[in-house]
Length: 230
Ligand SMILES: [Zn+2]
Image 1 (cartoon, rainbow, N blue to C red):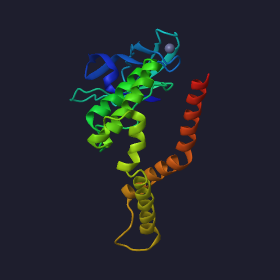
Image 2: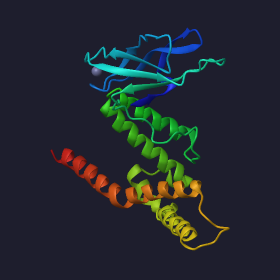
Image 3: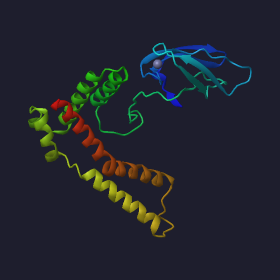
Image 4: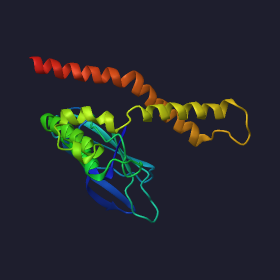
């Protein structure tokens, strides 16, 4: 099941104390098109969750919807809406409203635009916006005198102005020190749940960075080269 965020809700209706979602614009789990799903809920007398089915107007396949955690008491807010099976829709890997990041607002918007055009199936526009975002990132990171250069030159300049190794070395060092906290007995310095879960998060990034990303980067590079040589 995949949660559908409120920004995709297009119509709602008040039913007693429940704020029902009647319609969403979302990518169909079956054909991937961005379509409107009209959701007609049947509401039993006693319920903790609601279920409904809706057909995609593109391919005609049926998806299931589950609505849960709607407030039956005073405050009128949306509950949580889920779709099943999961849509192939691409969502931002980072929730910028909740995550501390130095990525500026303009670049966040550009990233979201790239996701949006991808989700409506505009592949050429997606590739153009990915490149534009890369340009924006180099603009952001390089000093003014380097900004007038073309993208290729800017990319080669990047390591002179940004220590690309530093984050990964700091990350590995943080994992080592966190491990020391656990390995050496000291009642005053024991890792808590927050430290343990952050260490696991960082370990995920480290494994991805060292063992997964290089292969993915090579694959993409080769596929693009193959297309260029056709
Ligand atoms: Zn469909």
